[in-house]
Length: 128
Image (cartoon, rainbow, N blue to C red; front, side, top):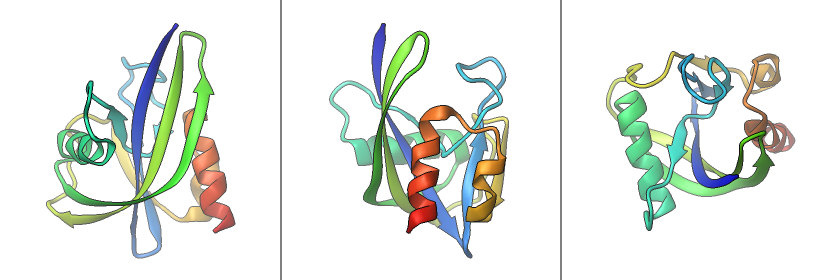
């Protein structure tokens, strides 16, 4: 079983949180998640998250504090997911490497078909 270190951006704008839908051909295809992705070997987590958001959504973000760290085991992999509080600095949101994106009210997050590793981050957000 492989282990992955993954980062996720919790991007807030006007009281809403950005969710991204995974492409159908990917692991957990069509599930919703906080955008982000795998770190490259030796990559700083904040730099890796900013890179992933550029690649997936075409925007520049400011990566803030860690909101939550999640350890989750799927059938074929173990994921350590670090969720960071982020804000958009510049750029126009594009669907470069995601199926879809939505700005969601926090109390609507759990109504989406979320990737299981993202659920603890949502639960943390709802407690804040």
